[in-house]
Image 1: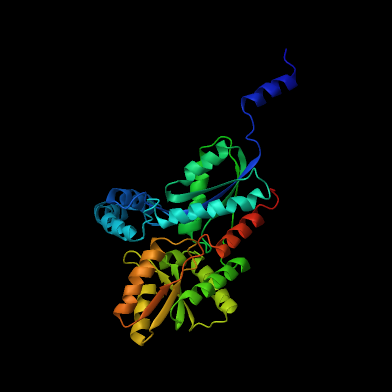
Image 2 (image 1 turned 90 degrees about the vertical axis):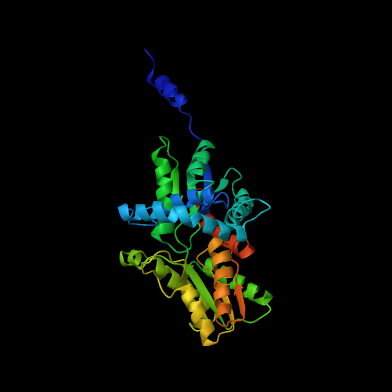
Length: 347
């Protein structure tokens, strides 16, 4: 008869532990794999089929999505992506920048523990969160720190990242422990990085803006009515940024962009405000997008192209889209600060 300890060793040997490593996964929204209509269609289908993004996934929405949006929208969106595409890497700037952020985060963590694995993924599109979490688990990570690259929390962004992560864990028998970096909309390091980045960018402009507009991605007002804290976070970010830069509401405005469909979204709308400012006689305008951690279609095309055109068509003269924090020194200071803070107790 086997001794008890011998049986235990045999059982343990059948499923060796992963090795105690830690993984850090930074996650952004996502991007099509290419600018052609089929690639954009695949991306939009995944994105717009998420019940966090479009909460009412009923028959009416399914008809609109499959009969109207997906047959018509991808070609036009593909042309927009063409304007900003990174042709050297044949990918969107969002993918290029997120990869660079992960690459610059690695040496920071190597100095603390060289066994920590840093990776990056997208909520929609590739590389998928699912594939990266599974890869970290297979690489021996017993613990994974998840960093959604959204300073302000919204169910349609931060929460859906967590949804996807736990869906992946649902399929794993030997689950790694998951920790999620909380929203950082009021973090002093983030606010300071925004201020420094804006101030440095303003110095490079050939004109002095009459005011700065802080444009955040919008969400439907109904989501807020149901309890989403997103606009409260945006307002607090701008309040702290005004305080840090010694600006008042007339010099640093808050607006919301990227509305979709006929429902009411958070106001004031960026495009309508840009037009109104130009009509009012404002000639020089700068726009910053504090809710985006990396430049993407919404900043490089919607703000820098579409809204610049709106401004100039209605009497404006000089328009500047201030770059996101991206993988700049201030931007990486934020990501390093968040990761090092949340790894406490693990390293």
